[in-house]
Length: 152
Length: 161
Figure 1: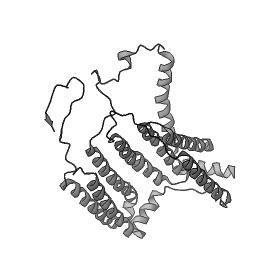
Figure 2: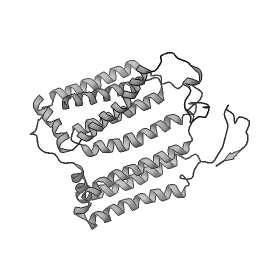
Figure 3: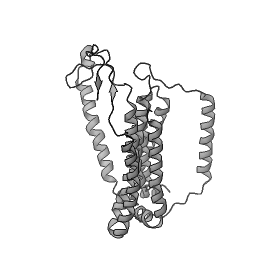
Figure 4: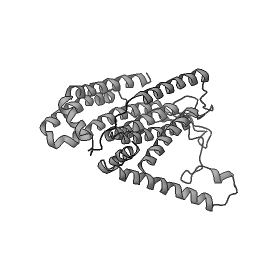
């Protein structure tokens, strides 16, 4: 049982070429992890506090929290993204067998895409794809005195 | 070697799933869910389901998780109140999950697992492609209508007006 089990798992990496992915993941963890471990070993331990612990914002003084309330528009965009993500998943097996099936596969997939284009047309017509128009409320930062602007 | 890999992936999946449930902060829970979903993709690979593993990464890690994080970030009090999830009914929850665990354990232990011969397994994508374009063409086209309906319905519900 045990030998068979490990043989089976070994087979996955041999036949389905997942070994490179494992190598990539190990490399990724190593390349990200080693610098972190190194810097925690090498850097001085005392906590200077203050600006040292600020978020790095390309040289700007960071203002406010990163965890702000997002606009609902992002949610709709994400929903649309998922639908077309699923569509793309169906394109993969189609692309693999495309050479064997030829014209038939092409027509079938075009019907599939055409039906989903209706969905795209729907969100387009209903202006879900238009970007946010909102009146900006400025927070406590340096723009606090600006008022009443409309920003596109 | 491969067995170690399997147990490592399983441990990562279960451990991160544990953190998803117990983390006090919703945003942290969402980030731990990222690790869990990736681990599930790894487990799919061990089942020779390479297409499903890729789909898992594409749709769940790439799409659904983004949606969940947006869902968390859309909560109205996120910038002021401390968001913490408070678990309620812990006792009933524990009893229920123990019952489900027992049920799964019984099924695992009583099933007569058939260990097949080792054979060369090609990628499943080819087979799936042939299936959906020949044998299961109608369900495949119906999927697009389902997606269409899902998009129209969800866009309508999440619109502001």
